[in-house]
Image (cartoon, rainbow, N blue to C red):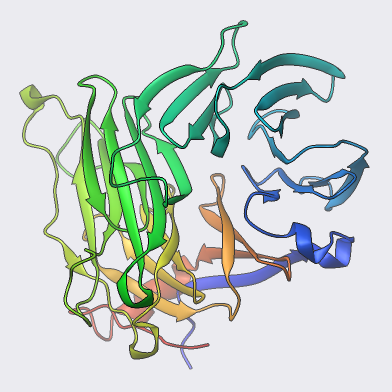
Length: 354
């Protein structure tokens, strides 16, 4: 059998490191970069150092949630509406703030900015100086009170934001909604879909890179069995430089046994201009951003993936499975890609291996 174009491996297991099953779930276990995994347990916070053979440090910290800065040993803690930022190396508290309403989601969008999402609004908290969180925009009505926010991101140029969430739909369906917000124009565009991400790609015949939004679209009122689509569109290009890059939507080939499946994340491999989409049922789709085509599809796990994170130095993607705590790594296998696709170049052969 020919080699497949992704490399899959299990990096470690959180339960084997002593993290209790109840703590391995959304909100309690976080991975903001390939440096640390943070787990909030009933009486302590466990910090797994991925740069040091998964060495685990346990601190007697009482907190409801914790996330580590993607670049530095700076830990953000939340208890109720109180937020605190600590520099672990200096053993010093850097900042603190009490929100006027509870947080429902938070994420480091860069080493210098912490995004805070409440039931009504999105805030950015700059780590420079002593400034308080600043409100950036209000959540769109399509991301109402019954929506669970599962992701947030900021574009490479810092001028666009994308927030996404899921909610219960008719007939047991899980609906996805996203909101694209322009910080310059202060306007929002609602999108129907479950996952999206920003990327910067180099285009043939152009001097400037293309900043694109890659996202999954599945309309709530779509007929049963209608497959979702992948969109790739450039945002924020100066009109004086020419028309923005935009692909016609491409159909995502969902297998017959996954009609009710939905994406939980879309992660960019910036080294190879590839997007990896992981779903609740454990499928991994690999898309070529330049063409929008699906290069590969496979079921990589039987368990639900609740955390994903890119490894920017290699283009790989990390994922963590709920409760079991398997931390896996997926990476493009470039040497196998050309011979894998070449036999069927017109449709990018798919695999449905378990």
